[in-house]
Length: 135
View 1 (cartoon, one colour):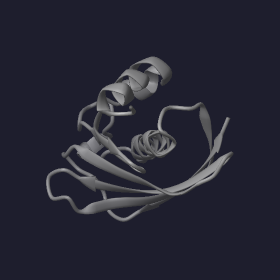
View 2 (tube, one colour):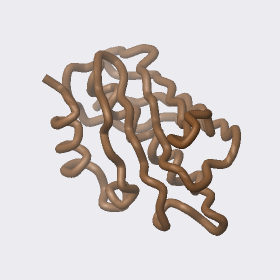
View 3 (cartoon, one colour):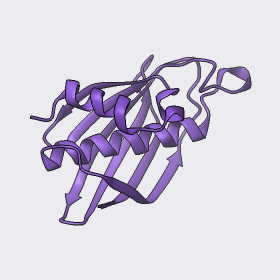
């Protein structure tokens, strides 16, 4: 069964050290969805406390990996083919939530959407569409 414990173990084992430095937590995985949290902190923020766009995009990408794994019944190696991020407003001084959902899961490709929002007010900061090749 692919659950939070399995996803957390994969996050520690399979992801690059710089992704682990983002201080991500797998909050939930179910069916075709995953929710991750990225803590606000100096490693992900730039001057003024604004969370870096690069950190937000990495959070969204990582969340989709777990949504695809949940939809597939377990983790499988995959790679990002495309990711389009629409930033709506700055994420400042708050943890960021990533709610990922698989829109279509095929044999070799997966498509999904991620909503990034601040934990403080749960308002969206970015919308992300992505495609993954399943290896």
